[in-house]
Image (cartoon, rainbow, N blue to C red; front, side, top):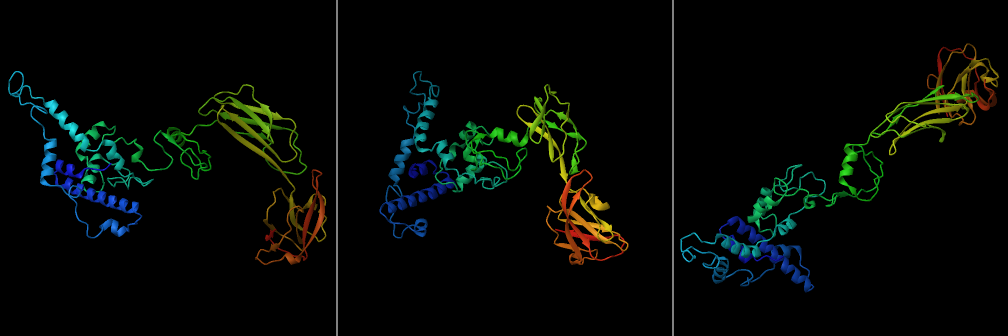
Length: 444
């Protein structure tokens, strides 16, 4: 909307600060008109010309200035007329001075004329710069972190000429009285806020998988890209739901077991606890398959038991899963089967085919580095493990010296105490030695 600065200057002729602001705004409007005119003629204007103006410009009457006669005309236009805009009482019907003066009529007539000259609230708000995204109020008009701009600050900025094309500083009180906030502006108006995913209708548009944990929303949660209510986002962050929980214990306990060690049955026991909602379901699973469903789970939580009569003889995972119709909680116990390691000292040529030939047994999973202590008396070192694991690349003695060249490696079929037979790599030291707590480190 193009402003009539001539009339505005008449209105605010007694306000020096406002006149300076109007001068600044008028100059910017003229520069913009010149720039647009040149562009329509196909002439691009440099930044320097645009800011400083072209040389030799002659002021035009009616555009750059107005005559005293015109000023008088403008004053006359907004001056109340006796008998039309007001009555002094002398011409009233009852002839009593001042009694019949139509004050309301005067105000109404003047307001009708001024409203044509003064921009509306919407025009003012549309020209106020928006704060930048996520700068914690640093781009707000008052420049204080975390604070919202106040109407008094807006007025100050207008007077300083920092907010162009806003001339209606006289009606800021009406803006303040009509606004929701105590400072005169409805801070729910999205024009006061930065970008991001929030919109004016109270929704937020997520951008897919989260990259950080914020309250109850954990990193890696896929929120999708469909708009959701801002309320639901804050609830998820500040008030994450309490999901039902459960524990699981087994008899015998889970852990590492040597191949061939068959467990005939496993007793399962679980303790459940309700979350935000009552418990509605409970099951036991074995390797992903349901083996038990509770017919009447306790809504507030309790104990669930079951005996798996099929037992275990290989890698097995048991699960207890509790649900409330919306969320689930779970716990698990694993049984892992491995072939043991053997190590120790003996005379040269030891037969380890029957459960390691008396060497010390280690029931462990494959480990790329193992350090053990040896105390031979005119004996040699032995080390053996399943041949399905990688071959050794280094054997370091207690002093850190490489000794793998002093060992002989062979493959031997070993049957453990449970009758399970597995091929082993056997490493035998080539030299008789006597040591006390001498360590060797075996590296795959």
